[in-house]
Length: 452
Ligand SMILES: [Mg+2]
Image (cartoon, rainbow, N blue to C red; front, side):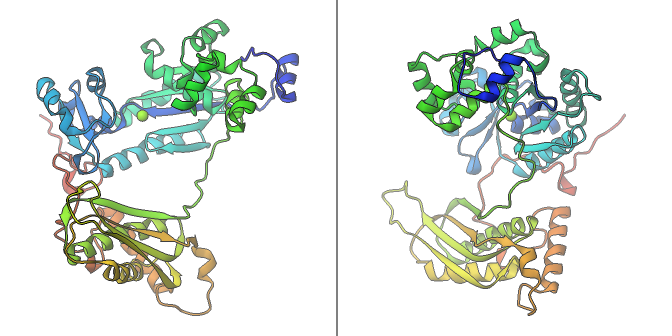
């Protein structure tokens, strides 16, 4: 595929001079859901199809997802909603609050469909997934076929539209996906591996180098200044030159564009070493009671994440702050790290520690905008299970109780069962004025279909 000038890599020169391609040559697909949040909303509300739709960030701040109709109006990602109100009236833009429960569940559905196609899967983001296609040649002699099958099945089973890019490296698969999305002639699947040489070169010579995964704005400016404007030009730049000028990461990118895979699939997520749960309040709050409820709620969800990765933590940090943008008001922010007597993942123990810290940093008379917790000193639970001593929070009963808690909440929805301190009125919670129902995760929100 690559027709570059010579460079310092022996490996590369061997391939180019002998034409021998390694037998187990890797092949990747990148599957990406189009306008993911908007598409999830449309899946259950057909009234939104063909209408301009935006999904707003937490507290209904800015547009974080735009339908094609909204993109066509020139609305940029991250535009604050208040700036859009006139345009919205003019064009009938529908604005929805973000419904992360729905998006998370739809994402899981897409990923589980993809796991049927390949045993090698890297969930790259909520709506993007890399698949390893090597070894599947007998099932799919022409990789384009698997691309179309994936598209069709996800469409049929979830209604979500996806595009598929296929290439010899992750960087090429990502680029192919970009092309599949932008050029309707591909019908959603762009497969570099079966494309003719002429078509491939023609494509690469028309696409801006800035579209390559990992080429940021700054780097693109530098590349442009050096006369490297297209993906083709970037690929044909000697990797040694890229290394000398931009470092080893960009050199690797050069190899990836030449079809030499340097980035492996990351199939197993490394357990997180730090878990943060925090959020701005829907309105400013000043009472310790409400702050406590919010901190207890954040701690509960952080503890659940901790248990999901089979870990325990050694300490919890709690923090609160006022709104730094309201300069006319008194400002205060503080945090405190509370060490635990024993590593634990027990919600009750963590909440107690977090509230202990909160009481010490809380000062009355301030309008607080944000609170949260950070779990640190995270370690594998297995290491701690073998303890000879039955310690509070680390014992078997605690583990069983937490398991039941997680199962109930998973089955019946977030915070069906929670520790008492989380409270139930939630005056502090996020502003989400136009949130869609949790169609797929709450019994009372499951849509009803009528047949006549
Ligand atoms: Mg997407």
